[in-house]
Length: 61
Image 1 (cartoon, helix red, strand yellow):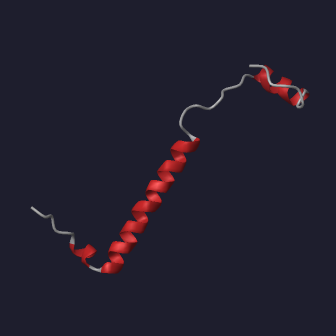
Image 2: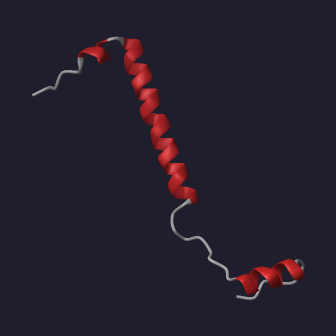
Image 3: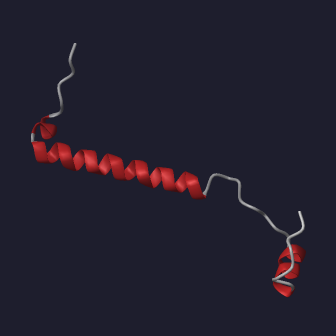
């Protein structure tokens, strides 16, 4: 059985606008999870101070 579209989506412009909004929301969600996926570093104060005091030294693992 084929589902019918809601009344407001029968107009071609409304379909295009709805599709553009859905695509933009998907891009926003993808960017959010790309930057805030929980794998951020949580450095302590000593590590930050060492890095600021010696910016050109190799980073210790």
